[in-house]
Image (cartoon, rainbow, N blue to C red; front, side):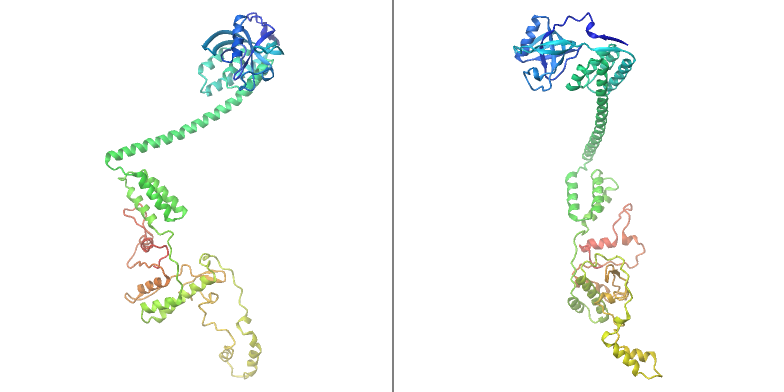
Length: 518
């Protein structure tokens, strides 16, 4: 393994042991690299002027805090680069542009008098190059990594990659990459202070690996941002073209006001979240659709129906049995049996509401199983001795079961006359002739239907109107006579020409409330 120090190069001028020190605020100088400097501090300008009168050699050192204008010996780093001044140009009276070239590393040994500028005794610290297979492998890895970083970096031209391929000296290669890559001052100073070129390469490879990952992620983010922006721009241009075409055809509308009006009506309608989501989706389609399109009128009709349905308007039930009886008597003569059945229905609804206002909300749940009612509850508990006495008084012969039942009837609770005001004793056929949904110990009347049977003109519809007036609800009439198509009730698909909602939805819209009496 061959070792050599770069200071042995005979082409380098002799470096004195004492140098004026010029602190660098925001950059670093490296050996063999040309660096432009802008000097404006009077102390630094005096240093440059004195160096031009001598051997033109100065020491360039970095500093951690670049905000200090005139740093002292304790505020600069101990390692720096000996540089030779090549050219000085005075841009203004208080500023000069200086072109310097780095020569060799040095270490400050002792600080001298800081007036009129910093001066120090230095020791030249040439880089140690160990020429072996490990160095060759490190140099090859560094070249490949640098090539990838150059390809990913938008601020580095392709010429940098070609120039790096031509650099043979490992030391010079390290400093060229360090000076052109985005290496921070601390990492650059770490590379400068390392004695061996191998160590410098390892530090630089570590930095370039991280830089490559950052550039790759940055490129991915920019690519995604460009795609989103291109998509948004494309959509914008297409919409502008569509508006221009509509204007030329004379079909231009105030689309913004049109859409905003529908949005306000949709939000004010009180429809559920699922319906509102679908309606807004259709509104977005309508906004980007020309009026001549086949679906335009269909979507507009659909939106009109959706916002006109009374989603949140509901009539409050007026469950007053006496008032209902009075209304039925005013509207209809006789029909005592029918009126009684209607009043029973209203009485059950009133009782359920008073006992459990939430009964209708829980309708549909499976009722708990009821235990068989003990026989003792059917017999008056205080009359057990009297019942036993009856059996003693009966003759031994000629007594039938009906005779025993007749004797016991006054002691047993009657079952043939159920109490319509007690839901516990209602059978499935007792209320409106239809089975009900049980809710705990009581039953809700959700979904029950009063069915009036009779020829035309006997008052079936007028009874429904009276029920609606008694309940305080709106009434809507839906005639199904001669109807053969179920789509007339539930509505046709929107793909049909002139499709409309079914009779039920039409009746709800016509009534203006969500709970009319049909």
